Image: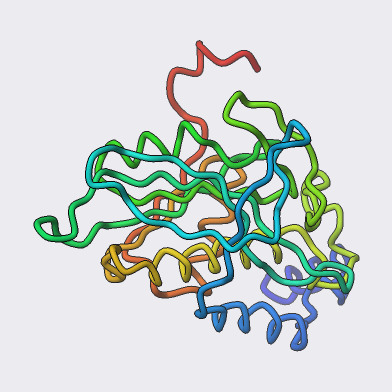
Length: 236
């Protein structure tokens, strides 16, 4: 029986289905080395949607109020060109003299979405420094309008439809890199407790989260989620 099953599997599946891809595995594993905080840039909304400026941005919480800021940060190259990730950062009210260091969370949206100001704000209300990142080369405004920005990486095309593209130019590679770099950015902030940085992804972001935690072991917690509550309210 065992020999029969082996023969059946061999006939039904091509040898390539079992192939190992050592060079791809090396590139993917190397994403775990993206531990240096990326440079962050101010967002320019003069065109109606946020684009990256060349002005270096700073992140600092206010002692008197919760704040929200749109930024871009450097990521890995796409088709030989530099890319930047768009993000909203929610910062809780914080007093350096009296308050402990803050926990932080990286937020990863679902398919077809982009960085979400509201999501970052909700976590900031709960005392987290929250960075909601884009994974599909989009940017938006606080009002919700979104468009492809000028330093975008690859967009997701179906379910791994770009699997024949070189690994470094694939959507999941860039989404993983952006999430790891966002972790490095959060951990570099002087008001963040680097032992308390987590990641939360929904839908495709949940898949990205599950991938990221297999490569970047620095996260204190991970919440990979799918759309699973109040489904009767969903327009889809």
